[in-house]
Length: 237
Image 1 (cartoon, rainbow, N blue to C red):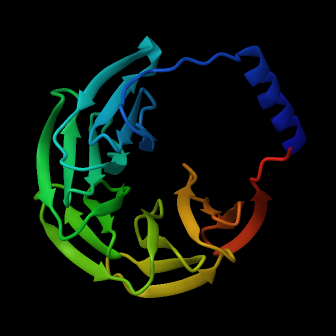
Image 2: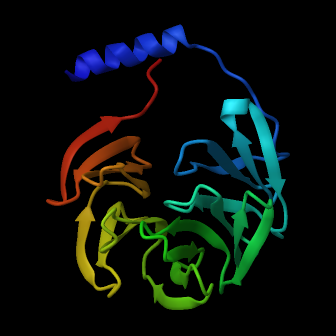
């Protein structure tokens, strides 16, 4: 079954093999993310801006300016395709509305921000900074409602799809899992022998994947919290 799927995907890419470049930034791009309806693609850059593309029209929709430092990560509202949020090294996060192309809220934080995520219920934004502090911000009042200082390098953060657990990948190769909203430790998984960099949940919420500096992508069962597979991502000559 898996082999047939791969063959179908390869055939699809061969039959639709075309690419197009969209100039949107003057420096390297740090983050890209799709809106929940799949119509827009946003990008954040070292040039201090974010851009939004409408791919069905093959064009850049708008460029979003206002940050005073690099836009290191961004994400969209989980159910509203018109809102996205950016995290910047200027010690702020900004919420943007694509209908007005304006920043509708700026929230000051304590450190240089490098990662951000929006809770599945849309009520909370979590942002992490270079000092390994994660701040939980109310998405309506734009005020901090919780803050956690971690004793390890925090790389990427995410809620599970049920909104009752909070996941962090760290510099020791581990996945740390907290209850939410209590933020009490549930489990720490030794996922990789090297820096665990990123994490992503599948749309159904049954699995999540992690990526590491060891060139491996690992697949995990959310309910059992056990690894299912690992795939080496190193390019072969």
